[in-house]
Image (cartoon, rainbow over all chains, first blue to last red; front, side, top):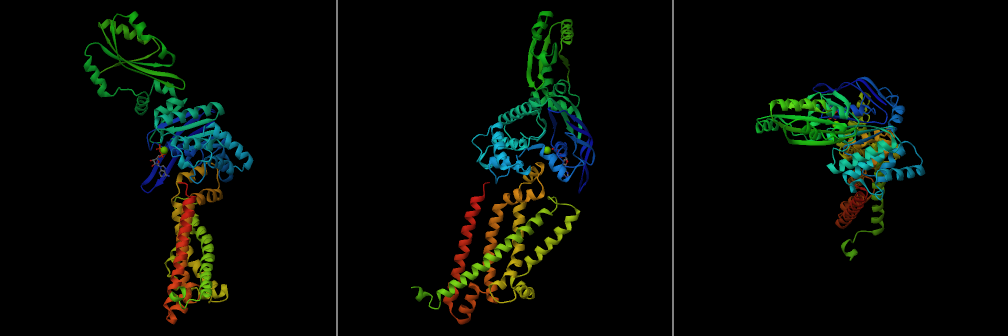
Length: 341
Length: 225
Ligand SMILES: Nc1ncnc2c1ncn2[C@@H]1O[C@H](COP(=O)(O)OP(=O)(O)O)[C@@H](O)[C@H]1O
Ligand SMILES: [Mg+2]
């Protein structure tokens, strides 16, 4: 369990005070994968770095697994850090050490005996799928393999929390997916809490259960990933959701569509959860007399179910269109009539 | 052949002088390595934004930095002269190979310290941060991260320093310490025996090239980047 209460971080810079994290409140449950999304400079890294004491909050309270991280220091803080793993965008491996030696490093810090170290390293190598690479140096590995070493290293001392700072941002899409799957597997297998920060909605969608959206140091929106997808409140979240589903509803394309279909109405349906898998269009056509053009559609998988949008052009008499909208309203789908914007 | 080229070179004596140069270089290098490493680490650790950065260590940085800058700026010949009282007290004499050591160490350690510092600055900040995040203390970070990760710079810096030291031993030799510099000056130049001077020069060249060669091989072998 991680509790972040009224946390503020102000940096003193040459040009004055900079509020990097502004009064953030979050509660992250044991065993969940919690995502923080935001653009560059939003304060995500500063926030996550406060969770292992790499940065101290200017004010507020931080509790990680029952430890008051903001106030402990010295030996106590170093001990606490051994139970909080961290992985980084640029991996941060020691080039002077082999894969096995890199993974053994946190065990050396925790004063684990040499024999136990060797055993544990072997386990971890298997866990992250790096068999045969034990004696390679980081310079001989691909980005994805380097991140696997980073993950193994972060898990070495059996942490209860894993912090991921843009862990996939330096990787190509396929490698990103394989690393995300590894993280998901680890979360399920070891039950540890994962806090990850990213600027890609795809990452949130793929493995997170809950998400917080950050802008200018503030959390502007947070909740269940599916809820946030279904019902984004702030403009920035809408942007991220659009990025996540590759939705084409920019102003221009919408206006073009409306021009192309002067008669009838264009509606946007939003499906969430099991409704995404029901034959709504077919039953609509059975119930109402009108023509339906499918203009655009997509569906995305998230950790708590699927989420999709469908853009339809409804044509017919005014009554039948109204009737159709009413019918759709009764189904468990979100419906929005697209007007000229 | 050798007799014809170097009629005045007595091999036994030349060999003794070569060993003296190697002795002065080797012993002073060992001290320079230790002091330079400590000073270099101190410069790095106390610098702005680094591991130990806070108000209290800023003055430590200022002192170390000033010490390094001053002793690096003093020409070696003058440093020997300035250190005469110190040297006679420490070594009991102002003449001979060992008498050159204090000046060699004090004059060269600051030079090496700066090279160590540069090497440490090249370490990826993220790696140091990762070690911190794992719960490493300063001592662990120094000997398991800072030194191993900058080892190629530490070794190549040591190579350059060793070569500079060979040069300094020659200067020290002219002033009274032993070694090939002294041999070239007293037995060669002062007596008008050019062959001795040339022979001593060649011997120094061989030493310098050997140091460079060995240094390059070691640097290459440890650099896994
Ligand atoms: N050590 C620091 N000193 C001064 N400003 C900082 C420092 N670290 C981060 N910042 C500033 O805080 C803001 C948030 O940075 P960061 O947390 O890295 O954002 P993100 O990870 O979301 O890109 C930025 O404006 C950044 O310049
Ligand atoms: Mg960041």
